[in-house]
Image (cartoon, rainbow, N blue to C red):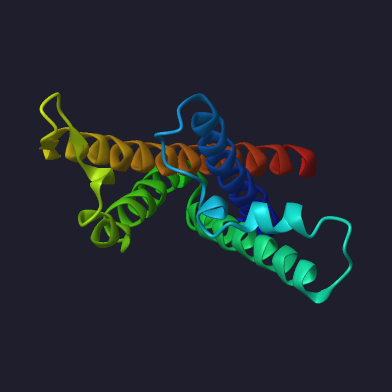
Length: 168
């Protein structure tokens, strides 16, 4: 497998993940935010727009680093035989989604807040509804990462087939 093919497929998976997260968040604000929004990177870039300082350069480097890290991760689905690239992509995406959903420190911070529980008509906090919403977000996160891995694997397989056809 060619390294360029793995990078191209990895970029496909990384951009798919980011675009799906952003599109879903525009439709329903309760869906998981892309990682770029959690750190406030987009707002900082808009605030520094037009300014030519080291802070802006640092933000662009951070943005490029995140994209390259995701692309490298999804590009791992290109290792090994091409017939298994899609399966490896799905498994890598699912593993990344599970890690992102269940291994973050966000849960501990939100437990004490009223964000996780909704009040009923009597003013009592309904923790079960908040827990269901939290679980929906986690399942959606796993699904989005899996979709990114799936597309990365499919892109790697397709690109590898195209490059082999050109050689013949």
